[in-house]
Length: 411
Image (cartoon, rainbow, N blue to C red):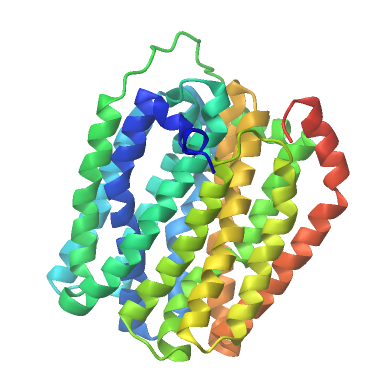
């Protein structure tokens, strides 16, 4: 691994500001994720309600996608991100207030999670599409995407562990408070970025017309369509494993909040390794092959996790599974960003966001329901098996997809 290759996107001033500006905020985000899951399970002892909270924080993406993708193509993306980051701060501070004042209830938590989901619906497509504006050259785009993923998961090594300790010492409220304050660095970095003023005329057609154009564009491209469907399925059946980790930590491994935090950090190690692996690639050659082995690797990890009753083994398994999941998501993002035309970028990235955030909430509900009746280990086993099946199906269409990608110079 050559450092000059792995971190080449940091040579762009704007990207460097954005990258480091996110660092503290992402640690806070992971602290909030762990604290929220632990809070809900502490209040309810319900696997189903863990799924419901996950559902409420992600379902808005599915219904707002016609507006958010078009917004990312129609309005300045930095302005969108400045707004969403400010609202994320308000949401985190709201969670901190209700917990520190001891007025937390499940309905209030659900409302704040729903508010978070609305913000995320606008933030995600703009954030994905914004990367192309802040890297110096198009050749650094895939590296910038991978480094974003690496930073996200590097923070996962710190945030969950810190959250587990803070929860034991002072409770969940301090995690929400620190997350809210951490958004200051991201907002400052976005404000400091210098962009070339846009000269292209923005499309003023009706929003639903533009969104329909984006759907037709994706439907007529086999690589885009196939990648989006794979991501949607993997996220639907596989991603909810993280929602069930509080149950694994407490009821299967007989641990506490710190055990949960360490398990999340184990997943973070694997995801970081996957992101750095992708960042270290000098080009996109044979990138499509990742979408065959990576879902199978995640699935195999989930199958093994279902049988583990050892903390050390579960920690290692989660690292392997997260390596696979990270490779799926970052590879899909890179392929889409390299194939899509600039005028459709925001809309296609909103479809990518739907594939993730639109499918995960239903997966959370299903996983919560299955775990309540069958147990978390059996639910995770089923998810792993289905991810392996998905990898086999994608392999069947590999040749056709590769042929189209080769035609546009991306593989």
